[in-house]
Amino acid sequence: MGIKLLVKRVSADARLPAYEHEGDSGLDLYATESCEIKPGQRRLVPTGLKIAVPKGFEAQVRPKSGLALKEGITVLNAPGTIDAGYRGEIGVIVINHGERPFKAEKGKKIAQLVLARVEQAEVTEVSELEATTRNESGFGSTGLH
Image 1: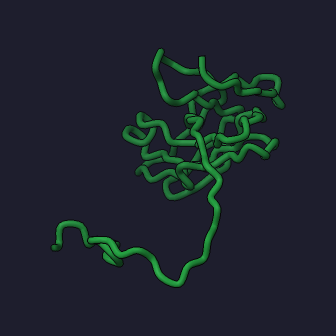
Image 2 (image 1 turned 90 degrees about the vertical axis):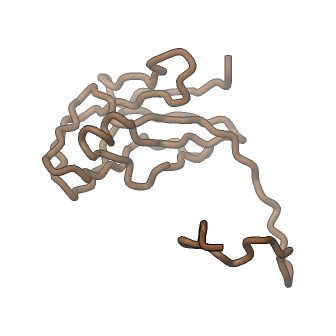
Image 3 (image 1 turned 60 degrees about the vertical axis):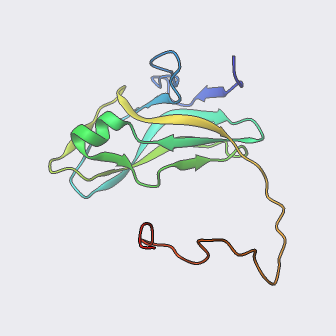
């Protein structure tokens, strides 16, 4: 098995994160409140959970593809990062890009949680950076050369 993720319920009816299928990358996260999210509106949806992410990892809160496709619901700061030192409740910042109001229902999937390794960078200031074939081309430059 992989790494150990410690989880604490802070709401009695919170559902533990779970993989739906063997081999899934993301653990499903579930809403602990029902709420309506109007088109263009953003909202913090609570999960009723706190977690302890192991050092050397981050937990990424990502959208569910079915909600994105069918309802226009996505995670606004995707992926939302939960650092190893954070011990507060997981809240999912969602936005409704759809054409109709969306009802986030208590006990239903609202997002997914993916654990990923992270490295700490050693920051070194330099006077010049090594040249590349791309150099400073960006923001829509792909395929123009």
